[in-house]
Amino acid sequence: MQSYHMTPRQFREYGKELIDWIADYYENIEQYPVLSQVKPGEIFNSIPETAPEKGEDFQSMMQDVDKLIMPGITHWQSPSFFAYFPANTSFPAILGDMLSSGLGVQGMIWATSPAATELETRVMDWLVQAMGLPGHFHSSSTGGGVIQDTASTAALTAVVAARERITSFASNARGIEDKLVAYVSTQTHSSLEKAIKIAGIGLENLRLIDVDGDLAMQPGKLHEQIESDRKARYKPFFVCATIGTTSSNAIDPIRIIGEICKKENLWLHVDGAMSGSALICPEFRKVADGLELADSFIFNPHKWMFTNFDCDCFWVADRKHLIRTFSILPEYLKNKATESGAVIDYRDWHIQLGRRFRALKLWFVVRHYGTDGLRHHIRYHVELAQQFADWIRKSRHFELVVEPPFNLVCFRLKGTDEQNMELMNRINQSGKIYFTHTKLFGQIVLRMSIAQTHTTSEHVDKARSILQEEADKLMNV
Ligand code: PLP
Image (cartoon, rainbow, N blue to C red; front, side, top):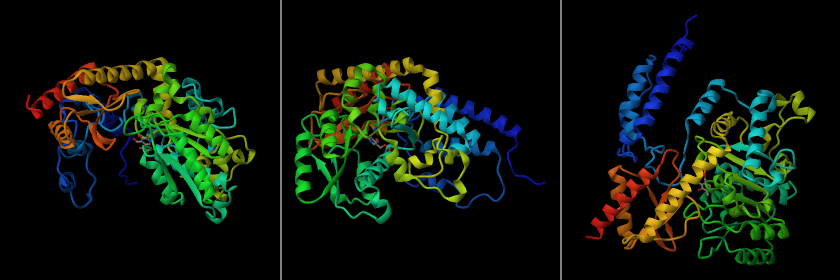
């Protein structure tokens, strides 16, 4: 029979070459400009307009990777990548992901690969213990954890489950009949705005609560807004508090917000997308004080726990709300294990049906590093960021904008917004390091996010010298 498939022998050969290629990439990553230097359309125009009719060999594909693709890569895994929040990875995570691809499992229900479900439950329970999370998130209690693709999807999942809880599951059946209203702070990640739109709540029914001088949500203002909404016959149902906001790493007061939520019967979702990883270190757990009052909590190992994208850990305090909201059972998915009630079918814990075996890469990471190793590297990043913040404090040209709780330093050149943008753009265009900006207190602020897997003090020192040199030039010293 004619076959175009790659044979196991070829796969073995090319697979080894590819591993070598990836290892070489990491060994030489510092030779690339961190921010891709291509112009819009350059990559698109360099790729043929039509798909090849005749299959091509692996070597020619890899030549094109080097020639066409690599110039268009921004090197997120470079130790000089300080932009946004990281999407860090590690070799054990890459191996786990390869294994998941190799097994090609689609773990939508327990029966379609019991190991995919049961490993996920176990690893999520491990993290509950290792990160000191509240016991109700553990699968042996009322709740449990599930791996989602992103924090955005998890936020939407939480909003929809909260919507169903407050309407006694009537909105799934009849559509939304109540004037539901949700609360976030002015600093909450935009994924919540998106979730509110998609869940049919309507952006006009999302209240942005003011923050204090540390950019944390003001619970007093939240309470006032809830009262005024109730008077206007709205039905408050959902609050999102954040441990580590995107712009400045601000920490919302979870306990006070949680007490308001309990009293008012609102779903509290806590977003720890990046900074949640810090909870692996006992000394950082005070930021999560009151988490036992949350209905759901997320963090992204794909940001700061060395697990390559995508991997979001989502826990709920009471899994029955989630399952009742998302449960479907078409004939073709019926099976004895599901009917017995003895297994978890994760398709009922999120939006999509199909699911990758993501737990493998997280399992590899936790087993490779051990919780000690994870703590070591997270602490090191925090230490590097704190040293960088000290340098900013003492610097002639720069000032700190907020006190950095962990690994994100927000600072600015003591000059105009234009000068700050000019400084950042010049440095980023040089390709030596890459960092990004935000706006805080109405001003442009520069952000250095120090959390890339392989960043060391050498890289932070290099960043400091570059900043110093460009600032001297800009300020004409
Ligand atoms: N929440 C916070 C605090 C974030 O910083 C981000 C992204 O940086 C998100 C949510 C969205 O993350 P994801 O890309 O996993 O949807």
